[in-house]
Length: 93
Image (cartoon, rainbow, N blue to C red):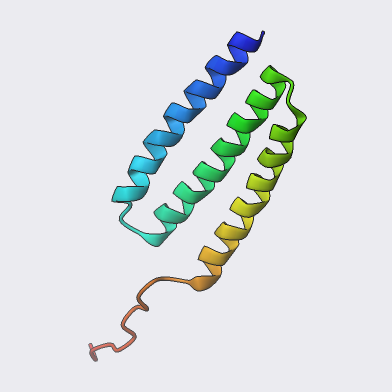
């Protein structure tokens, strides 16, 4: 059973790596926000799977802390708004 959980954790790590590559190429702030959420959620899942597979309760605490930090990071990125405000001057039509 532990081997299956470790394999699932490895698969999640590969999916997270794909998402982090997207983070480097993300065209908008919303895409970057989703990539940060993916990293937080995926990291939480990987750590939770490893905690169950290895029987280490401390890893589960770290996983839950990572989930909390990821939620706060997403809220902070959302509250900060776009990096450059849109130009509100409009030409008369």
